[in-house]
Image (cartoon, rainbow, N blue to C red; front, side, top):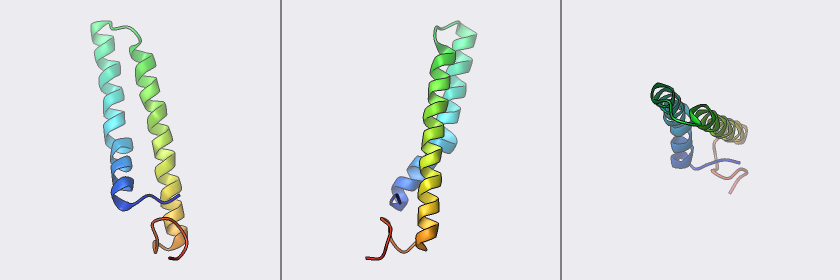
Amino acid sequence: MIFKNETYDLIKYVALVVLPALATLVGGIAKIWGLPFGQEISQTIVVVDLFLGALVKVSADAYNEDGGDSYYGGSD
């Protein structure tokens, strides 16, 4: 599975920057304010982040195996 460059860049940015920051924000705010389910919500965000990270890795590996010639694998 190879993503288009724009899709790959967006997923990578979300996985590397947005979701870890969001998980930290939710966990911290919930703890400070005593909000319910803060740990569960932040752990769910981390699990989603792990999944997106795996998709990024699979896409990068497929792209590198293909030589970067095609977005969808194989020659056109």
